[in-house]
Image (cartoon, rainbow, N blue to C red):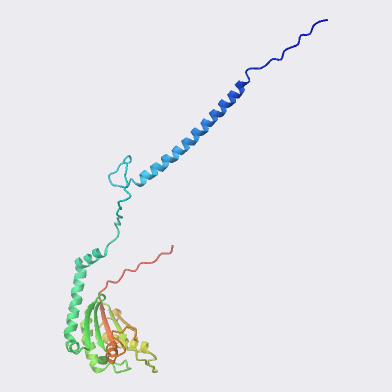
Length: 262
């Protein structure tokens, strides 16, 4: 009988190469991914760095490659080139020839009013003052009207005509205000002090127009007892509060600007 030879199983000693190849492939893929991530972060960092450099590159004379050192302890002043300070506005008003000439004309009018009303000023029935809005002539109502009435007395017509003749040649806006005390009034003609003060102001305006003042320059308004000069608790205070105030305005009219809808 033929003798069978038992075939020996062949053992593969190179199987580790497969695992090694897989490991090298994974390691290569890992480094590729890491490199890609690092490249993206570097690009983002470069963009951020350039943005910060551009923001701090607003100093005159700096170059694109120059570096700016910012000290957080030092406050950087803010410059507002288009803003005018109050001192600049005052200086412009004092040096503007038109404003200077206007102020001189206004003071000339005040002197003329003082001279024309000198007797009444000495009696304390008329005061001429200069304020922020211009020249104001306060005339006591006892000189102009009877109690509870808005018709001008004969003596008042002479005084107001003198004022009107001085104001007629000028071009200043004029505001005539009527004021009363807090004593209530209720008549068919004047249901309250509002109507009384308004009609008294209108009577003075009408007389100014008759003496040659341009009606377009005049404004009549009544304040009743809402703007007292003295305490209404005493007879003297109430008498002082009953008055007509004529203000010669010196403010420049504002240039109207149309408001645009958003």
